[in-house]
Amino acid sequence: MTSLPNASHDDSIDDFETLAVHAGPAPDPATGAVLPPVHQNTTYLQDGVGRDRGFTYSRCGNPTVSALELALGQLEAAPPAIAFSTGMAATTTLLLALCRAGDRVVCGDVVYGGTVRFLEKVLAGFGVRACFVDTSDLDAIRAALREPTRLVFLESPANPTLKLTDLEAVAAMARAAGAVTCVDNTFLTAALQRPLELGADLSLYSTTKFLEGHNATVGGAIVTRDSELAERIRFVRNTAGTIQAPWESWLTLRGIRTLSLRLERHSANALAVARFLESHPAVAEVHYPGLESFPQHQLAQRQQRSGGGVLAFLLRDELPGGALEAGKVLMASLRLWTLAENLGAVESLVTHPATMTHGTMDPDARRKAGLADGLVRLSAGIERGGDLIADLDRALALVTAKVEEVVR
Image (cartoon, rainbow, N blue to C red; front, side, top):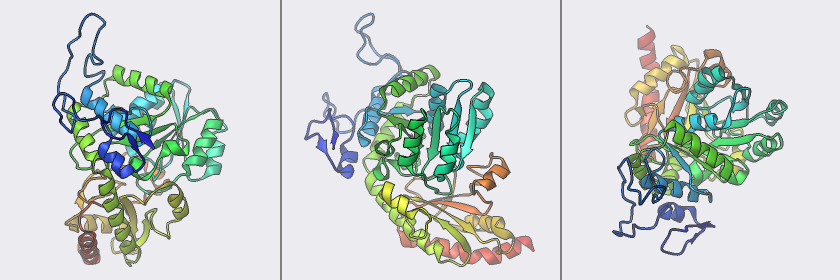
């Protein structure tokens, strides 16, 4: 049960679908506006020296940003979240807030490429070490935690292979080792997975993706029930100036109201597409937690409400020109799947991780993590599922002939 302290109606809501619609502030008391207004301003009147009304300067806090933070916290039965200008701003601020020279971060071996880049190319220069571990392997996590560790950072499902981590088990091991656990929950959101309820200390989001859901903003957020962690992260956000802007906050708050409906459709479409691809002769592997054939399907059923809207598949190397060339032809032939570096929007998107989202990773490390050159990531939108499948079917039928033309 989640309490909505600012609501003017019954504030005890058990159902997430209802909560997502009503989370955040009550209607504006001055005007009755159902959605909070956009406070697009820099500074705020103070009633006297040292007597402000809760806001002083929008780098420190803004009423519209606070409205989003309240809603995001309520979605996870937590205090208000901490909102950031981008998902990477959230990750960057978290790492700066928690880590000092000599500290060690145990990070999943399959995470967003920007996270790897910041750990290896920036924080390493300040004496923070990163150890990349297969977080789906509990023995590997256990071994990694034998050395003093400040933070365990992971994604589940992981981007882009959809590999899962047993969040409850890893959070318990990290806590016993004196480490903080942060789960990047961008792929599922609180609608489909609750990391804090599974023992994690922090949930991190690129709100750019499913939370806002319309390819209209960039943003990030961190949710925690640990007041000391929240205070430290807010301090660093204020110091670094990484707060989210009010207009982006308002759009994201509006997006949350349809979050449950959208994710239901995203997930249904992704599952239908995954089943289609699984039976296609040009496809070698399909990665989607909702498939019964997915190696971690039982874990997905235990800690997720559904498989989510993202899947990945590997084209067969036997295709003319190889899987990489076949993937290029496939992505150029699609009509309804837009080639872009994003996911979680109402439009269906296709991405080539090896050259796009993870293009800056060391090639050997990329291949070791399972990011083959022929891997294709799909973000299923909310279009009619049959149309999405028909588009893929048509493009796959063109692959062999067109690849032969390219390599001839």
